[in-house]
Length: 210
Image 1: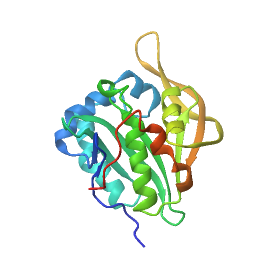
Image 2: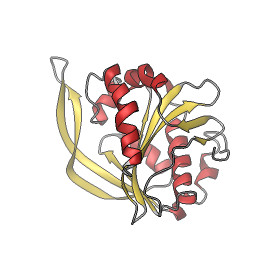
Image 3: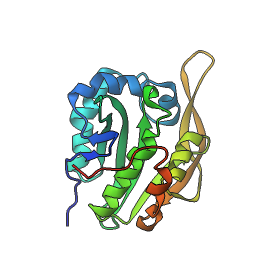
């Protein structure tokens, strides 16, 4: 039984999810320095191009080959512009479960890309990779992320109290840690029934895997 994800790309009619490459360095660094990304993730701030290059050339390949997960660059099909990242982490190959997270660049928000990319990743996991469970964790006040989880059919399972460290701007402009709750969501294969139909008005239908 496999214990690593294949190094592949996944397509929808609007997006291509592919491995990160060194051409993404500048865009990835710019995306990670966004205020919302800084507030709701543990990405170091400021996030440098050297940090982006290390992520692309060292961290992401090691996570995949080590069986821990996989990172996808989310790009627009027509422009090839980087518009986000999908990450699978904490993968358990015996249970066939993994944790999914998503980041959308500030220049691409409001297009439904997070839902589209997360949903096509879930479909790939359940059909091609034979996974049985996907977990998401969203900070209690991160309503945008919670809306994505709901749109793709996730079920809220409960709250991990005081389990999340978010960040807020201090008066001097620096970031300070703020403790909050995690909302835990799960997605099972049967939860996807009808989800694609419900979202079709928001974005175009899905193509085949590459």
